[in-house]
Image (cartoon, rainbow, N blue to C red):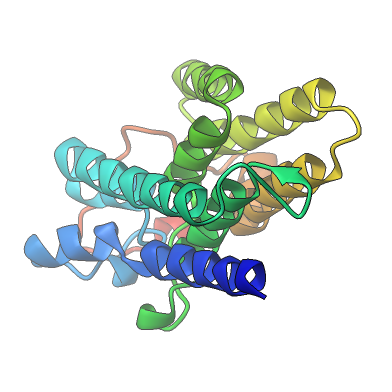
Length: 217
């Protein structure tokens, strides 16, 4: 019973931490409602395009830290092996943080795309493969200037690496596949624009005073 209660506590704590929107806090301080400009998402990518590099970096760091905290809480409350699964607590806390970021209860379930949070989670759970996946993401973005493509490659690379090196561990399969599925779902419009050749590239700033909704084309 105690293990079940701790599991619920980790899931709720992770979700609520994820619901803290760094993007909304940063944009509000700048006098902009980030949910009404650009892609209308509250994540670092939209903040970067609308409010510039500094605010984009602050948002990324804030989202990265809240997901890291969720993983840490999970590892404290459910340390070691739980339900026969090594690292269950940190995986559960981190996954729920990503869900909270994407669909925050405090903001009408309209959040970001979970990339910064996912980067934190995969690095916390496995620093080696998380670091490799992050490096691949950076390389893809640098080569193509498409943040969306790099973001999806981040979770695809991590999923493949983890599945190959954790053969037979179904919990790792579910964890990594869920993270990848979440990033694909949140980027479905970007995928369509990538296929159409109309996806915006990094460095193309959207001014908050002229809402063209270019990301919605």
